Length: 208
Ligand code: BEZ
Image (cartoon, rainbow, N blue to C red):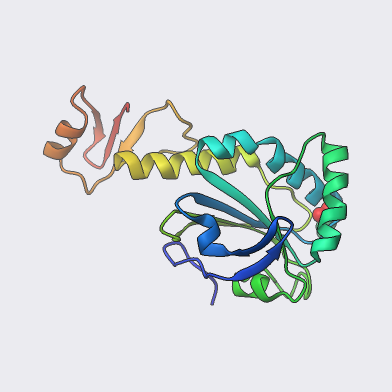
């Protein structure tokens, strides 16, 4: 069965381009952006790896550690990183897991056999410091992911946790948030002393 939001992310030991890791220990008190890609030395993957490296500071600001995975070896990954750095004008420092035996890809349901029996599709898992899966996304092999959306959803999750709010469609930081229906008007008045707007009893918005 595939992994779902709210599940504990399965722990595993892995060889990576930055050494051997135990996944949960490696996450520590941070968040993780765990993403798979079909293969090294492929064009779409090269741009995604480069984009993740370029966004290193954005991830650090959010206390999120990126970690990639493909079903190639550490030796292949390390050679490929040189190409990523050269072609995407960056320095890739985050680990890439070598999963040549597909053990972790299968554990995380990253192998979709009708697409490929040996290569992972483009899965994303956002994992919180309690090691809970907070978001999953799956992209096809020929479509690169939108990294603005990945940062946006991390912002939305962390804002939701911090302020006990929800976020509307296309929300970005600075915009109005939604007061969840589970919060009473009395509690909302305490949480938002500068006021909130009731558009419908179930649709209340506020500025943080
Ligand atoms: C790529 O990563 O570039 C790619 C992988 C599989 C199919 C098409 C593109």
